Length: 375
Image 1: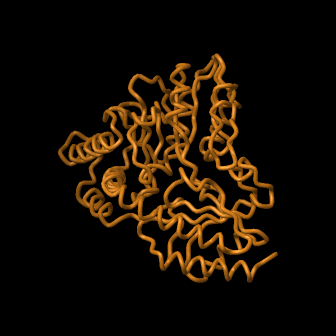
Image 2: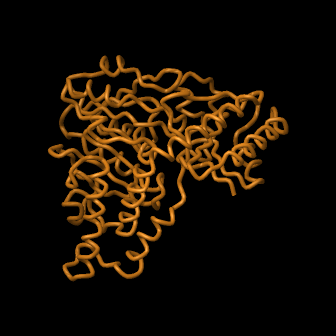
Image 3: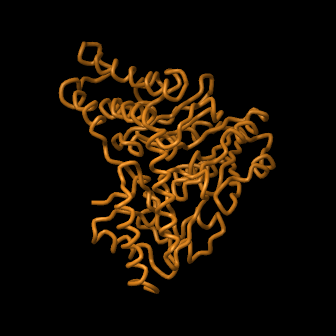
């Protein structure tokens, strides 16, 4: 199998699996229990929290475990909503559905949202962010890196705008963590969402970084887990796996990103030699493994099914929009017409892919373009 859909999910690495295994079989106690089995579980969670905090350059008390990046996004936005007050949030037109649909819910609650434009490569309009600020603006939420076209946004510049106006700044960093090396201080955010299954950890675990001192309403009510901020028995083994995955990703980031970036550029050049293929997104300031193309006169779903016959896994859109026949809102936002926005193919590679695999995939895409033209 040739797997090129790492933006959708990743394989659990052997080291992550080994780290998780004791907490699935032997050390399975409830972390809230006071007996030793439970306390070993509690220690594993707190050690994982410390490890993740160190990697991000923040305090352990600022790390909250969640079930996913989507939950973290929901918590950041909905938790910022203040009842009986004017609430205005600024975001962008190319955000993940977890952000866009949370904003729709907030608007139903009486809040207001402004979605700023992006240019033809997906970079947000900084001037439009400044011009959108109102007295009631409580939060700016701009993703770190786009899940469809890979654009890496200028977070430090946005943070400067937010801080000058004393506005909270959140970023969805689900695609960036594990692919872009950074510390929180480098990007200047107050809140950050990440997800384990995008970097070699299991599905069902995420993090919300919440800067100390921020008044954020609880999203899940119930028990006193996560220092009373996020109810639900902790996903012990997955939390341990997430910490190991982040540690490995950060330790190998330079080598893996350089290799993947070179392989990405090599593959893009080969793809652009095929008649009817157009690149979406920037050539620079792009996630190292992201390749997003438009297939002229060929349905991407047909191409995905054709490639699957050769045991090749790619995507015809973001994983959260799989099966959707609607145009990509991201491609529409960068100026693509409706037809082109329905014709997107995304390859997301990583350090485990090879040049030979990329050559083979390009060859099969070329065959498919000829076979399915206008079909």
